[in-house]
Image 1 (cartoon, helix red, strand yellow):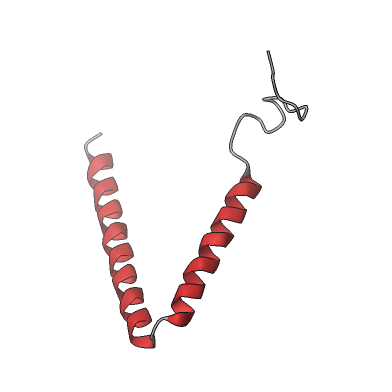
Image 2 (cartoon, one colour):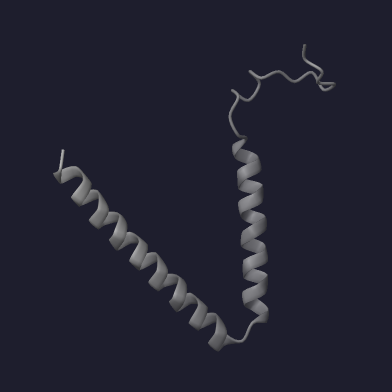
Length: 74
């Protein structure tokens, strides 16, 4: 039995997550991060940006290397 008081059913959203809610959460987190960077010293912001860029670069290389190795064995 459906106990929803707002006339909602599982087929309204297709049973998946709501993309608008995801967008709202993503924009909220972006605002928090940008607000933090705006109050941080420039040197700290640049150092954090360099660390994040290096982390993403290593991740991209590992993903590319892992996919090449994985597809060549099959």
